[in-house]
Every structure is written in structure tokens, then in C-alpha cells.
Image 1 (cartoon, helix red, strand yellow):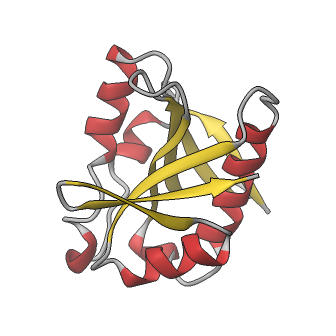
Image 2 (cartoon, helix red, strand yellow):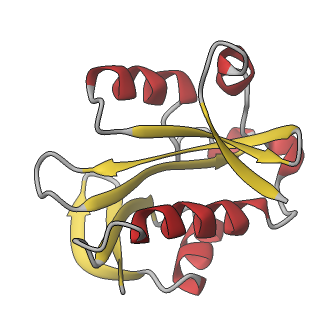
Length: 144
């Protein structure tokens, strides 16, 4: 069962050491950079993704400073744990956590279209492209 946990002294280095397959490395900012971002942007919520007691990935979301909306900034599943459904389960947990805030009814994320597996996952969860593009990232939104 997928569980989201805070990043702390016990799991910090393990989260930093999670890795992707070579073809995915340019699609996701490193976990170290993400955790540093959360340090300077305390509105960010970095989370370790566990399958029971095994660390399998990393996620981060926040209310964005620029638009005041929820964004899922990061989702990554370690290369040794991909294709097991953990990304979908983790996304559902993150979405559920965000939906507890009844003041919001949209969740945004940016995705590189060359990451077709990610695009397919997000579309299957109800996200749709909204036409915005920032650099290489195409913006998707889930309205609920």
C-alpha cells in the first residue's frame, strides 16, 4: 500500500539517492533541488513515497505563489520500482490531500510532452492540457 511521508533526517539521503532511467533524467528536476526549493519556499510540501516500508519515489506539491492555485511540482518513481502502479497510487494520494482544501477546485502540473508515460498517467487521472506552455513544460489541469 502506498504511503506518503514527510522528508526527515531518517529518509533524507535515501530520497536524494532515488534515481530514474537515463531517458527520464531530463524530464524531472532532481529530488535534491526539489527539497532545496521546499526549504526556500515553505509552501511546498515534499513527500517520500513508500510502498509499505520500501521507499519507491518522491512527490512535491504546493499552492503556487504566482497564481494561488495548487500545483503538483514533482512526481518521480525510482527506476527499480517503475511499472508497478506506484505512480498512479501516489498521484491519487497527493490529489486526495489537495482536495481536502475546499477553497480550491483545480490542480495544475507541468509535463514535458516527450514523457508520454507521464502524459498518459495524468490524462487517465482526469488532467487535460489547457494550452499554456512554459519552456518545455505543457500545463495540464484537473478541475473538480
